Image 1 (tube, helix red, strand yellow):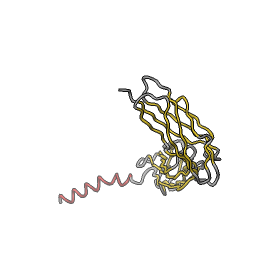
Image 2 (cartoon, helix red, strand yellow):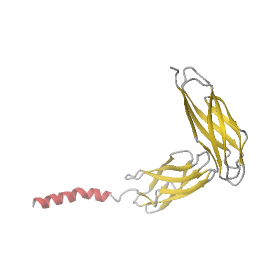
Image 3 (cartoon, helix red, strand yellow):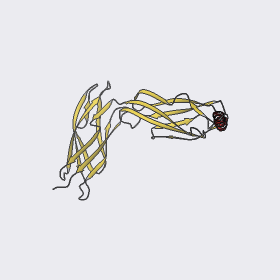
Length: 236
């Protein structure tokens, strides 16, 4: 008898939960990830993420946000009736990105009380035809130095000749120079060059950082960004 009462009490307590389980708006995506595969630098690719309101009340898209400015989302409808479908289009712009595997996220916020935020993830392998190695410049100096030098290797995987025509320095360096310049890269070829940077020395500053912009005549890859970080240790 005691067991029967306990079982009955558990059923009564679960009834409100079961009754509420199907109420309200519910968002359900057909998929939450997409891999664009190889994408040439400068191109923008799109993908549609279809979802259904499986609940019994109107679903409202309250906000869309992305993990970076290169990824944008466009919604089909801000209000989706019960049992109806809609979509969100993810747009991924490769302009300004370095080569390699990329992962970006979109966040969809709705009035679904059970799942108020859904993360959509996109992947892409950004392909650039003109690359430079190393892509980031870092050096530690044991004492003050007015000039810092790096050896760079350039590669051109396209079937046309490409030239590195100029260099712009941004940040805490007073100037930078690339030799030889212009640097000519044969089709499917490579070449090396020496980069020298002049530091604006300050007695109370031990870190110098910024960005160098290499200018090319490539039709899409007109700029190549190089980040730099130089540490100057105090003389002992």
